[in-house]
Length: 326
Image (tube, rainbow, N blue to C red; front, side, top):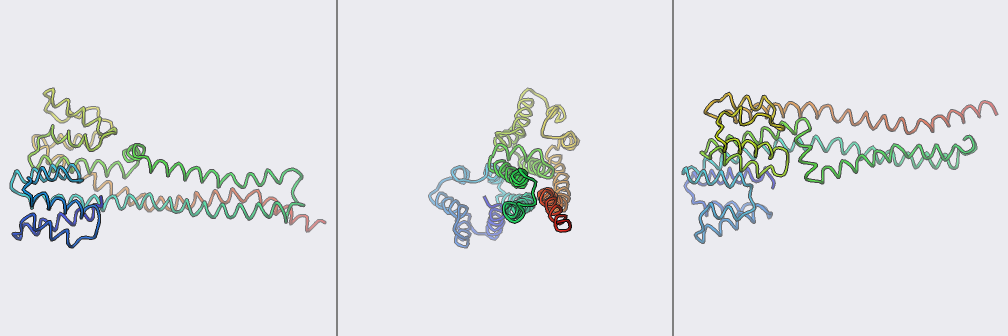
C-alpha cells in the first residue's frame, strides 16, 4: 500500500469528521477525489458496507487494510475519538512513507551504478576482445590471446552474478525481511516502527499482551516475531517487569529494552521514547549511508574496470615496443 496516499486519506477523513460530516459521507467525498487504485476501491467498499448498516469494526476487518490500522480504529471507536485516531494514524503512515522512501533510495543508487557499470564493462569487453582477436593478434604471445580474452570477461560476469544475487535477495520476502533486521539504517527503522506501533496501541488502551500478539502476527515469519512471542508467553506466566519479559531478545538491543523498562508502569511512554530515539538514529544512518554508498559503489566499479583493462594495456605496451623495435 502507498503509505503517502494512505496517510493523506486518513488526515482528510479526520478533518471532515471534525467538521461535522458523517463517516459515510466523508468516505464518499474522499473516494470521489482519489485516482483509481486499490485504496480507492477499498474505501468505496467500506462506505457501501457502512451504508448497509454493517458496524465499522466488522466492515474494516473485511477490507485489505493494515492490521494495526484496523485495531487502532477499533480502539478509537470504543473511546469515542475516531478523528483523533485517524489523525494519529495519518501521521504514523506519513512518517513511515518518509523513512522508507529514503531507504529505497539507499538501495536504488548503488543498484543503478552497478547496472550502469555492468553495461559499460560489457561494451568495453566486447570492443577489447574484438581488437585482440583481429587488430593486435600478431602482437600477442602465441596461445595467450584466448586467455586474455577470457580474463576480460571475468569482471563483467562476476558483476552480473552479484547483480542477480542482489535482485533475488530483494525479490524474496524471507531474505528481504531478514536483511531489513540486519542492515544498518533498516534495523533502526524497523525498531522505531515497532516501538511506535506498540506505543500507539498501549496509549489507546489496548492491553500489552494483545498489542504484542498483533505485532507478532504482523512480523511473522521472522526473528522479530519470535522475540515478541517469547515476550507474550512470559507475560502469560505472570512476569510484569519489562526488563525480565524482554531479557535475551535477539532483534531488540539492550538499549531498546532499557528505554522501555525505565518508563516503569507507563510502558506506553517507554515505547514512544524508544521510537523517537531509533527514528533519529535511523535518519542519521540513512544520511551517512546515502553520502557514502554512492561514492563507494563508483570506486568499486572503477576498480573492476581498471582490473579488467590491465591485460589489454600490457598488450598495448608490447605493441608500442614493437613499433620502436621492428
